Image 1 (cartoon, one colour):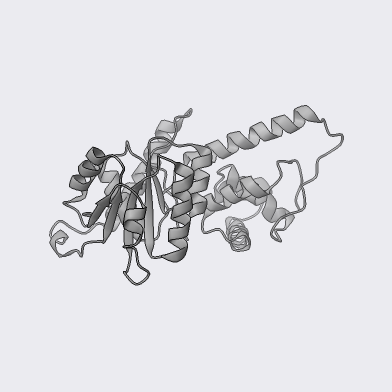
Image 2: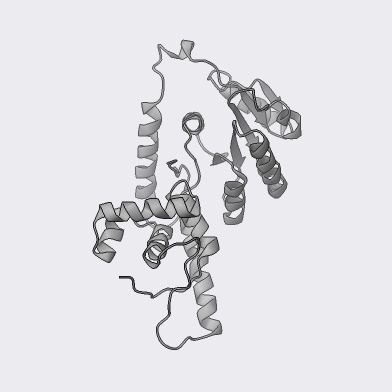
Length: 274
């Protein structure tokens, strides 16, 4: 299962300490896979392509990465200039690209590239996070979504984790999803005041009522321990349910499940589970 790391959360109350913990855990894992200084010379370079329309920024990023295993073998101004180099038999390729300009079109091209050449790892660089843009990038198959304001060390460690199969997406997207869901609920409540207790809508993808409610907990960012306390079940049972949920909706991790739920579950709440 791929984990999702929050490297540059959007500001919100209490975010400082949470961000420090997330960053600490991220760096701990990143260092665990980092070769020692004596081994850097023997590390095989990773075939890396760089896409940045701005020539000055492109040259700056190329120089930053030149002393690492991710030294770009090709730097260009558009995805079309490098896509032909990402052949299906060319091994793993890391594509670092600016996604700020014409985001929708770039994501469309990324999706086609990933379908045709799945061995390509796509790392998108953006100026700022936008919920719709993040969701579009996630669905297009991007492997990482990073702000351009991140440090050199975080960029390199992120590339290391992407090669291990990890997904690097802003954890702040969960806060945005919760805010979006709250607005939807408030809008529905304002337009119609339902009488009597609300019932959970029919589960999607064959999810049981219990799994549907637990999926909502994942949207709220609840840990297995918190979910277990809410429903008076063991953490082991929660893990079984989460595993079943991921399998049924074909998600690879809890963040993917939360994103899927935001698009497929109704906003109704208040159901009880047995």
